[in-house]
Length: 322
Image 1 (spheres, one colour):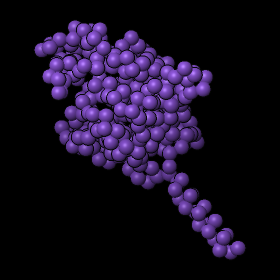
Image 2 (cartoon, rainbow, N blue to C red):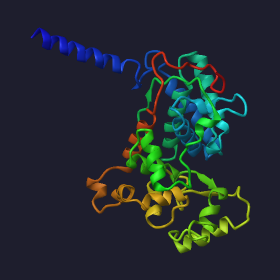
Image 3 (cartoon, rainbow, N blue to C red):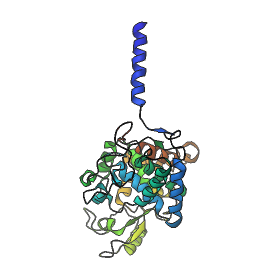
Image 4 (cartoon, rainbow, N blue to C red):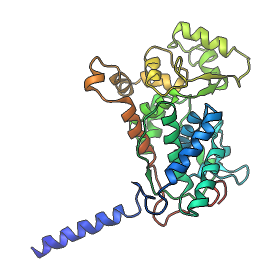
């Protein structure tokens, strides 16, 4: 009996140690109860003048988490070797939104709220503004102390094979289902013709266009991104629904209307294809899983990647500066 009691105490002690300093919903409820409403207000103000702010903030959160951890390292600006200047982060923005939110939060709750948490909250609020799901954001992250351009060398890339994509996600503790759902974030936002050139005009091994592109869509893409044309021209990543968060992009992937090669690759693998198809099964609206709920779960899971908590890391006063 004494030994059993000792074992129970030992197990409980370990569990308490594990849970201490971990992320949780409402981490700031007592210390700074208005933090989420402050961040939400800033996101709404920026959104009123920039309809593209939702995909920008969503992408910022993703890129932050995929280099080391969700630690706001992408926000640091300390010269050409800062992580934000990595080629894999080309086109990532939203820094001014986070800095504004941080400044307003600092005025009320100085040195209490991490930039990493503000990035996560802002992404959730931005998604909600374009008809996406509202979900509880776990908070309690600390800001990182390292920002180096070389650490972003292994970001998922539009030219990656499906096996490469799965491997990169598995390394972060994410599943093939998470890969599909987080790729579906491309339901909002645009890409540049620069990322389309290879798929349209030099697709290996055919040396022409990707044969899986719907012929009608191929004509549209080539009209928007002509060979030797302006590679900076932007096009929606979700044909027909690029400003609203919905599952249309998955339907486009099924029909050969995927814009990015990495999105099209989701239908070339049995495991990821089953995930895509699961949202369009005959009884899916009644018995199946909810795309929006699953996307929210994937975002929460991504937000846990390698987080710094407790006494780890720091709380920055200015997000771009250590």
